[in-house]
Amino acid sequence: MLPGPDQVITCPHCGFLAKQRTLISGNTIGAILWSDGKLEAPMLPEFPAVVRCRGCKRFYWVDEARVKGEIEPFGYQSQHLELQRAEYTQHLTIDEYIEALDTGVGSDMQKERYLRVHFWWAVNDLVRGNANAQIPVRYIQKLRENLAKLSVLLDENDPNERIMKAEIARETGDFTRAIQLLEDVPAEFKWVADSLMELSKKKNSLVTQLRPD
Image 1 (cartoon, rainbow, N blue to C red):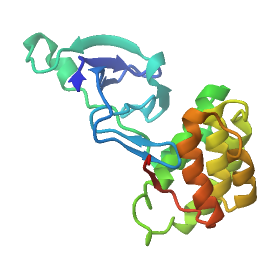
Image 2 (image 1 turned 135 degrees about the horizontal axis):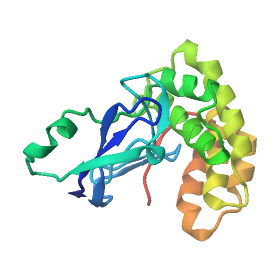
Image 3 (image 1 turned 135 degrees about the vertical axis):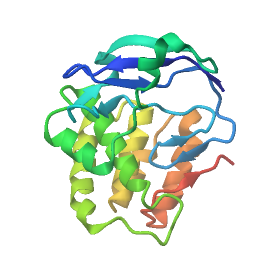
């Protein structure tokens, strides 16, 4: 993994500074793929696309923020003291994803899909890799509503999105629908589809680590 310069960005609403990490190159060595599509890759981290400003507390999309300057990795530049003091951006919390969706931050289909997928992943993080853990009751209905709306946004003709729709069906207990969606996928996606098919036939709705044969 080769880190790039930190980009110091300004909140479009109030101008408050934040630092966003960048990456020149990375790889998937040691990566873990989960059934909900989340990839945990230590050498290829995902940086947040939407953040909450620490100044005005409003949400904004990182690619819509102005870049005020850059700080090169492994270097100390005294002329950038103001920029260096800025705090790093963070992924939203579960409650922040809910708030962002409820307040219209997902203003187009692509943004809405990002928020809904990452809300799903954030809730699943509470039980990911722990078969004995349970999703807190206060999130269950919100999660089901989110997954229903996310499924509508996904295109069955796209293999990746078809598999994600199948996973939504599986995690919400609609195993028959999941199996139907998984029956016809291109060869390159077959190992993932076969893994989810097996889980569906066992009526297993837990988010699960996927391992190629």
